[in-house]
Image (spheres, rainbow over the protein chains, first blue to last red):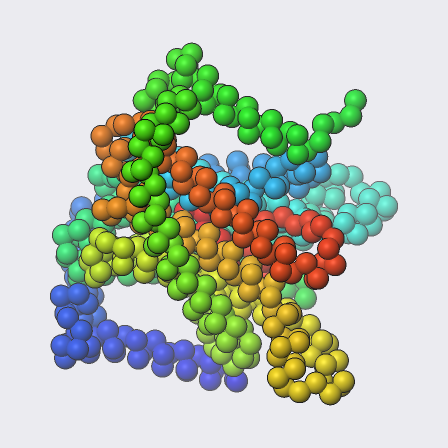
Length: 250
Length: 270
């Protein structure tokens, strides 16, 4: 298929979904109380975005996401590089990581609440905790993605460790590093959302769970749209950078 | 000096953590409200065993159905989308974009639609597992070596033979990988949703006891979930090894758990 063909078909699919969202509740095929028509949701979205309460909630959520990310990435990356670079540490910890990954991290939320309360710190701590594991694993994979031949060649030509780091490790890890950032951000965002939905007084996650409990469907769908758009926009930006940084590989 | 065997170190770490769990609250380093003693946790688990067992049964029931949804639809959709070039070009990038959305934000919609009973948990966990299973199957199905098919065809294999002798065995590792991932995600999804809004299940028990600050019972619930997810992982991994043993000719495989593999998705860490 040609490129513009693909785009046309995708737009057609999107248009069909949006049209169905508008028409099914309007014609009564679907109960409009359960699925409000798209136009109604969009009007609500505009109204909600103008409310100071909602703006404040979005700001707090954004801060939580950013702070948690700043804490989790260096911690996870350091541990991940250590596991990849020291075979003995790897032999000890790598098998444990499998189990850690399959455990639902949310079961530790009660501990975070007992220690940090239900404020800003608890959201950041929990999200950073869940994200650090993802960063750790991705960082290990990133280091292991560097071909040992490259390092060997560089070393034979008398490169210093610093040069090896700058000229071999960083360029070959770049695409994987960006992928790591992207994937960790997805989990970081999820972590903040779960923590806010579980127990909170503010934040957009708290708002949508409240709207859900009060059966305010237009508001709930408006909140879901806001969050989805932000998440997808961030993801696509990093994916674009990823593609640009990995052109030399192929 | 010879370093001790990594396996020994792992077990020592585990035992050390259990000992610390008993000693730290005992010596008062952390209040028992934050971390109740291991012995006390096990004691309340024993006292309320029937309650925890009943909750676990509800959770397992939800996990089982969610797993069927996540794995069944995920593997079939992933194989279809990954196997057909036109669909792959058309849909795969869209699904990887959608994957960025934290699915947990859809849970309030499900509770509004299906109530706070098992249905909303099953739907949520099913969808939670569906996307990663589908994406990893779509990525895995493409790794089948076309040389295998070419060889089979040149030796005069019929279409039926090609499917049963080449395609199915060659895709087994992908399918089992999908099953393991889907099951793990179904457990996570059910536990998360039970903790958020529910009236039964092990996640609900944890949340209920947290709101009344009954720490030993909270930790008993956490312990039960830990055992459940680790047991599942061991079981799934053993099954996987047994089924795809021919691929590695019985050699022990050394791999890192990679949350990312060429655009394949990460198992969720929620």
